[in-house]
Structures are given as C-alpha cells and as structure tokens.
Image 1 (cartoon, rainbow, N blue to C red):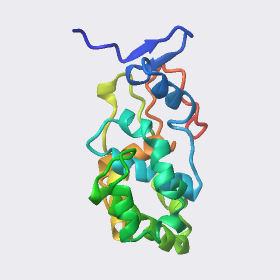
Image 2: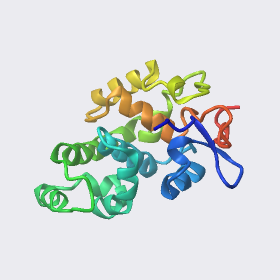
Image 3: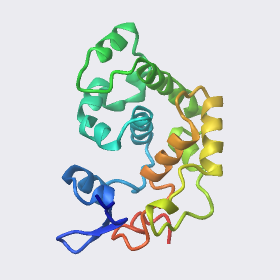
Image 4: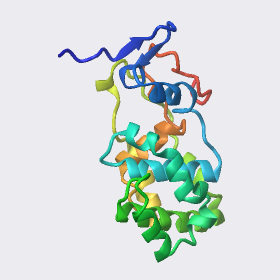
Amino acid sequence: MAEPPDLVVGPDGLARPSWAAFDELLRHYYDTEWGMPVRDERGVFERLSLEVFQSGLSWSTILRKRENFRAGFDSFDPDRVAHFGDADIARLLGDAGIVRNRRKIVATISNARATLTLRDAGGLAEFVWSFRPEVTPAPRGHADIPTTSAESLALAKALKARGFAHVGPTTMFALMEAIGILDTHLVGSHRRGSSGVWA
C-alpha cells in the first residue's frame, strides 16, 4: 500500500499534512490549535504534561483522552496538581480514561511543583519561550522535520535542572512545535506562518 503524500488537499481545498488530513479530530486540532502561540502558565503546563504522556504513544491517543486528562488533573491548574498526593496517584492509576502510567503521573505532579518554583524566575511560559531559536525550519516534507534541536536540548537540560522530569529534547521539541515557538508546518500547508510568530 502506497504511503499518503506529505501534503493532502482536502475537500475544502486546503492543504494539510497527511497526519491531519483524514481524521476529523486531528484535522480540527491542526486547523485551530497546533502551532498557535500559548503564553500562559496553565496553557504551557497542560501542553507540557500532554507531551510527557504522549512519549511513546500516538498523539491521536492523547488527544482523544484530553478531556479525561483535564478532569483528572484539575484542568492542569499547577497550584492544584502540585498538592496531589498518594490518594490522587491511586485515583489516576484507576482512571481508564487517561494513560495509566505511574512514572508519567508522578512526573506531572513533580512538574507542577517545579512550575510553582519557576514563578520566581518569570514563570514557566516565559522560561520556555526564552529558548525560541532565531530561525524556524521550513520543511517541504515530513522527512525534513527534525525531532530535536540545539534549543530543545538546552530547554530539556534547563528544565531538568529546575526539577522537571520526563522532559527530554524530543519531547521538548514537540512542545515547542505545539505552542508556536517553532513553525514546522510544511511549506504549502494552509497553516504555514499562521501563528504570527514567524514572518
């Protein structure tokens, strides 16, 4: 069976990458959210947490469970998640609506606590955005999209030094894509340049 082309023009005449072209949920996410700037603490903490849970899984799996994650983690309010204890861990491990991975659950709680301590340094959002590179990739196909960068490596190292867990350079690159720090929309996609961050 032939692989789908990197860019697919939908019935609406708009070009999207193949991963966002056929599934309605992924298409909506791509068209309205992915790559748009997120600059508030709760928003960045949610995206970071979801990227942690996504590691090793498909993004569609996480996206389909997103509302369950929000319910389980108190809308990703760092102040609330930071106070989760053993009972909350047990509750989340028993929640079939999320990804029940103890290490990732514990990491999310630890990351909430680390997020609170980052407020003294300007906050999580400002900290993550400070690793924005001078240029963004301009991929013409999926093979042109990197999975890490010098900036994602530096961000991962800096967050680990601040007490964050499960924040490797690949996960941080995905976060930077998701919240608009990078624009890895394929050249020719109707979303390329839509964030306003990159001219």
